[in-house]
Length: 483
Image (cartoon, rainbow, N blue to C red; front, side, top):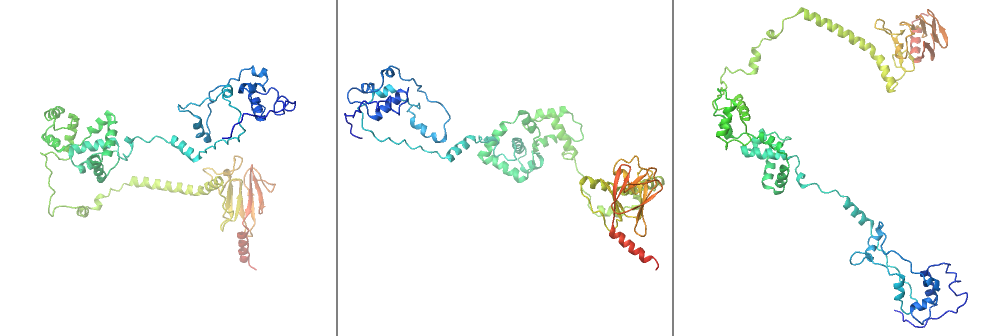
């Protein structure tokens, strides 16, 4: 603490040092700013009370105004991460924000002016790491844990536990339970044993199973218990009814009323009747006897019976009418297969045009190709026919696959390969077609060169020649010519 003095130097009252002409004071500046400037320039006199000393500096018209009214409530806004810890410093014991003193309260508590002290640096703000805040947010967003009743049950459902408990109480045999009870899914004998021991000796699993079974609907419980296995005592009571008799439902109802403690509570007369019929069907009633299997040499096995059989006796007699019908159907099927084999290349062309996979133009057996916009016709013989295919007229090149062909004759033309390797096209239709822009009338022919353009009706094709194969044919033809 610095030592306080009662003497404060007073500045001379000149026009340069007055607050009104000071460059730091603007006209109409507020009261609090004036007090701060007066205190900073040290123009207060040491005589009088603090209010009197301030009145020497502040004009009377300003002193006449009341201090500005401000609200003491804090503005509620969303706090940032770096304000979470700092905001707790200004709270009072009750958790409310402390009110800041007004200007008049500060003036009343002013003591004799002390020497200027260096300003106290503000307290350092404690930064809250983002990892802490992010972990807190993640903790808030975490989903509530699953209820314990549906946890750790695995494949075993509440209906399965109820059926297991009921069946064990009836039979006292886990093997019979495994063979006779139909669960929601297939369980092995070991799984059934482990589940039963867990229900008996594991308090957590047994508690969860009981909670799950308590939530089952009463109708489901009745359905599960109605399928309970029959105990040996129940089957022995049903065996008292003779297999040769024809008992009615009243008989089983009387049996049920006479032995209420022996039968399961949910047994009905109809259920007892159905189970008695099953016992009778499989010869399980006490008065039924199963014939023993014969023993000795006279017992036949499958191999002995097969040797005694005559294969000729097993054959059906020959039917001439049936044989004739089968031969006609076989011939018809073969013709259809042959027709489909002929159409296979045409459909393969359409498939290639749709898939966009274009094979090579030539192979070792292709002499020339008549290529259109959609399809490619391969010439693999020395003479092919062009036209429009119908049911009665089969041709080599069906131009209808390329486009509209109603103006094309069924037999429009023929392309031939001569021995010298030249191709010629002849018009055998009613309408003319064009080769490289030249009209070919009916009955005329024209030589085809490589890349010749053939226009038939509204369809346009390019004729491509396999030059390698044609050169081989020309060479062979020259060898055959006598010199």
